[in-house]
Length: 100
Image (tube, rainbow, N blue to C red):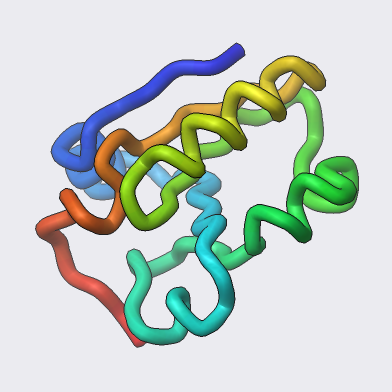
C-alpha cells in the first residue's frame, strides 16, 4: 500500500501518536537537521535490503528533501508489500522544528 500526506498532516500526526518516520536523505543532510524522532536510513541502503529495516505489518512514513525520492521509494517498497506513506514536499515544505 502506498499513499501520501502533506507536511501539515505530518505535523499534526506527530502531535497525536508515535509513528515510524524514516528520513531517506544521506547521512550528511540528516545531520544538518531532521525531524525529532526520524530515523535516518539513506535511500540506497534501504533499497538494497528493506527486510533489514522494515516489517510487512507496519506503516512507515518516509521523508526526503523534496518528496520526489520518497515517492519513488514508496512506490518501489509498496510493490514489495510494505505499507508506505510519503511526505509530499519533504523538508522543503516542512515548517516545524528541526534537530541536529
